[in-house]
Each structure stands twice: as C-alpha cells, then as structure tokens.
Amino acid sequence: MCHSSRAPTTVPRSSPEPCVTERTRHKQSVRKAFDRAAESYDSAAAVQREICHRLAALSSAQRPATPVRRVLDAGCGTGYGLHLLAGEYPDAELIALDFAPAMLARVTSAAEGHRAIVPLCADLEALPLASGAIDAIWSSLALQWCDPSLTLAELARVLRPGGIAWIATLGPRTLWELREAFATVDQAEHVIRFHPAEQWIEHARRAGFSLRSQDQRPAFALAADLRSLLRDIKAIGAHHVGEERRRQPLGRAAWRALEACYEAHRRDDGMFPATYDLILLALKKPETAND
Image (cartoon, rainbow, N blue to C red; front, side):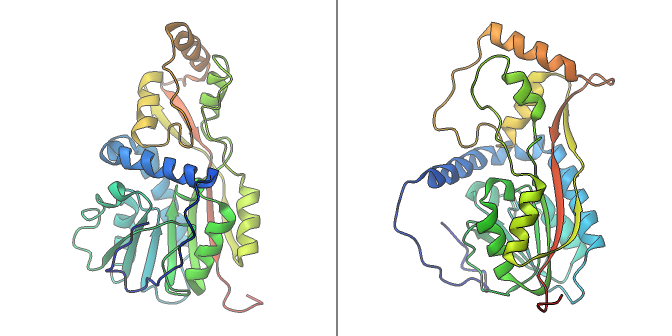
C-alpha cells in the first residue's frame, strides 16, 4: 500500500505476511480496474455525481454537534465529493483517500484553492490513521468493494466520539437489468452482487455505530442505447471487477439476444436505464455508552 507522508494523522500499521488469497486477488482486481478508469471516469460518471449530491444533502441534515476540523473522504475517486466538502467545511483539513493511485493523482484540482487537501493512498480495511483522529467521514460508492465488517470497524476506530459517518453504498439490486439480460446469453456472473442494507446496518452496529438516518432509493444511469450504457459502466471501472479470467467478446447472436432482452427496460423517453440500488446511511459514533 502507498500512503502520503503529508498526512499528520497517519500512524505505522503492521503489514501481514504476503499471501495470495481470494481476498487479495479481489483487491488487486479493484485497484487495477479503477486505475485503468481514472482518465475516463469523469466523462461517464453522471450518476456518481448525482449520488454525491444526495449524500451531500444527507450530510447537511446530519451534521456533527461539535466543530469539524478534519474530514476523511473514504474512497475519493477523482475528487468530486471533495469539491462539495470544501464548500461545506472551508476551514477543515480534508483527507482524500483512495485505493487506486491513478484516481488519487487526479484529485489535486478537485477542490482548487482549498487550504488543506491531504492525499492518502490506502486500504479502507486497514486505515493508516490514528484512532479518534477524524471528526467526520464521507464515503460515496466505495464501501461496496470492501468487507463490511473490516471497513466499518476501521471507520469507527478513526472517528472521534460524537463524530458522524455519511455513507453511500450499493445494494443487491444494482444493475439488475444487466444481470437479467446476461442470463439469457450465458451462465456467467456478469454483475457483482452487493450486500443488502440490513447487513450494512448490522455490521455498523457491531462496529459501535448508532444509526442516525437510512434511505434506500435507486439512482439511474441512462444512455440512448445498450452499447453506450455498457461503455459508460466500463469507463467508471465498475465492470467485471473480481474476475479471474477475461471473457471472450459476445458473438453477434448473443449480442442480439442481449439487446432484445434489454429492450423491455427502455423508458418512455427512449433511454435505457441501469439501476443503482443506492443505500444512504448516517452513522454516529456515540460519545458515551448511552448515546
């Protein structure tokens, strides 16, 4: 893992012995996918920006009761959320954390003029941050790639008592239209299945959080045709994450079957949708056992 020496809140963490496990391969796959997508991400991330604004509305409604001096953007991508955080907390230090170095490299101009942006390349499941060092945590569409138990425990550890975590993640009906369509052409698992909201809330409770707010309403990526829709999903790095082998391209007959199935989902305005099963959570780290 790489990390920035500029982050005053970082502390040494022990590293496990090298071991190529299924989890390690998954992490390597995620990092490679988003590194490759760094240049194309912003041009195709309309739904991701919409979700950032929904998360910003939640964060405005669920503010910490005490001053916010340091905010962690956990999974910052190219930095769109940092722009929103800089406007909301102009005097706070913003820690821009991402697992993919190429994504993090594009962050510096996201909140240009903000006095304190600290880039940090690190794993959300093993944060190189001191316990209780963070006043608030923002995470938009990053936690779904992680182990919920490990990640929420780490977020709770680095958050100070009374701090708030605002989280946007994805549920199991994400891209269900694609899953349904691909099932007509082969038996492969083309779409990753994410955890339901109930599991996220239970893992948050076990990590020591109390639930302040929950919302689950879908967001939609839209395109004029299926090829454009799939191209946009590929451009943001979310395609085929976790695969151990590269699939062969679909043949013409399979592609026609895929298009025919997806045609049933065409909206009245002529656009093809792809559902993002959005889960929004506001979690508080209690100040006392009774909070």
